[in-house]
Image (tube, rainbow, N blue to C red; front, side, top):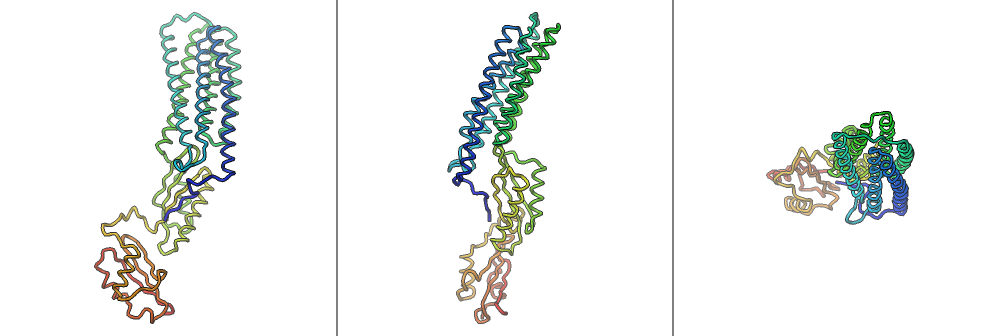
Length: 392
């Protein structure tokens, strides 16, 4: 027996639709604000770097323009990824956001690598004789203040709407602030006589860009290939399941992420003699306790087993279903059996264990365990038979 909670592929409630709309609006607003700021700072730094002889500031300005490109990616991706689930995407569209983060990281790696290579060549060639001037310090200082502010604002929004892409974009902004700090330090050093510090700073900034891009790319790849939860979180969920009353064992616990959401598949082993509804209730108790432990869980597909089916693979002689077995018993006894609710079947360890229930001795007349056992013992799927008589 398996259950999925909550069911996927169903229409969202009005409140859920409203939440998605609000999240999309918040992401668009913060991204547009950041894009305008990035464009202004990028232009300021590139012009100031060119006029006042700072290669590091020019690279920093290019870094700001990569922020503008990433903002455009974010705007496009967020519009699609925040759509409600549909028939073709029953779990939602968050993986599009993951792909956008991967694309953003790839852009950072490419830009950073190109800038690093160009400045390494300049440093090796030598001939550095131009000293940055004081306006470079002003431009870099303005960049530090502006990028630190937009980082904090963007990250706060990203955490509120649980968006890895927005948070990644926030960190991209902070790397711009870091690189501007490097420009401040290198410019001061170059003005004191260490001219090569300016080009070295440009290389350092480019390496920072590559590092952040690699982190975003690698995290996105891990999500796209369905990397599971950490060992600690997995063990925590396992302990929760095993500590739930009625759970005998847990023989499968699989997890994967989709954005900030966690998806789980779990197989719970419960006593074989309980009712289907009790087994379901035990599963729902496990679900509630897991959600309390990890609020990021979106869907839990739990399967109720009466035994570890991994330890008991399917036999070459599959057990017959209820209809065939009922007909076989009727043929064996030479009479029709009572209603369906009077026949209980237990499918365990590739065998069938049969229980027959009769309302009176008269109804059970001529029926014995020995007779049924003798007639069915040659079947490889036969386990045992028990007969219950009311008042007997």
